[in-house]
Image (cartoon, rainbow, N blue to C red; front, side, top):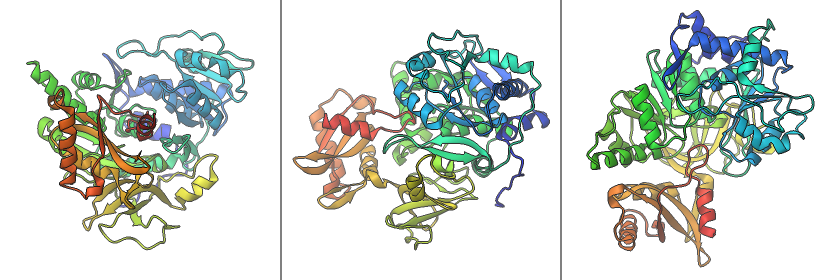
Length: 550
């Protein structure tokens, strides 16, 4: 395909939202939250009003605004208002500990914080010492179906000298009365700082411009998986995570589709209820939740109840962690539709390699999205010009495309290791076969040696998931009497629970020994109810290692 180009004057608020009004989609439902809907006209009107308030309140171009909100409609007009005002968006998880939120406030030097009263109250003890923070806007932490635009009170200790603190709906109402002009924004102006998962320390902000998000939307959302104006989307991943910001807000808005939101913690029961309520055609999912939906369906049928009805779903998107082939096949055979597994990153904004309509290869992450280039290079390669490995050889994945970030804010050393001009070194281990399909082997920093030979946890995990008793698992390298050996943490499928744990553990070890090299089998197996996740929905292996040491 021809690589998309964009005009010099480009604002994502126009690209994703305001342009839909000119296309005649103004009356179409943009957002649904419970039984209520907001049209594109209504979202655009609130976004423009908030943008005018922000500019009038002194927000300068390229200043950061930190949005820490649940998945509810004000999230949409908050981010579009920020972009229209020329600000730079940073997003956070409202469920994060106050210390983590304080770190980001300082790191991005946020001029404005948009959050809930509960989050603001938890931060109140440290807000007085944040001179860069000039305004705090508050929205209710509304359960699905409640009023997300209700006026809220400002908690004690939030208002500081020279700082404005008020309800978000009041700022929008004030903005409606203003005639403040909005700035001209250009395609290479800073737009959004996306955070890495922070698996090796504090999260870092990958600095992106406006064109980065428009580029990926054109080549992936429109050109690869095919979002349509008649789609309805929902997401298990929360909106603060760039994966979901794209799939469950920006991508559907780019074609004038409808987004269904729910603010509750995403469990299988909550997701099933959202599917029943909104009847989505696209679901942003993760492998762990695909397994939990299968378990919920089994439990309901075992009680004599009707199973889950997912017949409305055209396709599920999957990313963030490995999608084992046995799980994919079970899910599609049970529920129908398709699952498009892919890989992306904060450094590239979104997915650059994916399965897609008419081209699904189970067990792989599909083929490169048109507009991007991929290379597999040796781990010690110092630049993108190093010789490529042969098809099937495992090495580090490098990716090139017009959505690449400019670097990490405040970390030049890490930026130099990751960003090489147009190319990004991902740190993920892959092989590309002769047909161009990408096979995941884990992260380079996940590997551990057993008897002097590297073990890739993903290989052992895939093998365990081929056993009929295993619903989910994680493999880590741990110390056994001074030697590193594999340990498996396993979640059993419902029908396998309650039996002889010792005998089952021995059976799982034998299962791996029969299929993989002897040094790869887990020397210990622990059965748990669930695996810990980080706020991106990925299995938190660092926490598992800490639990083992404890």
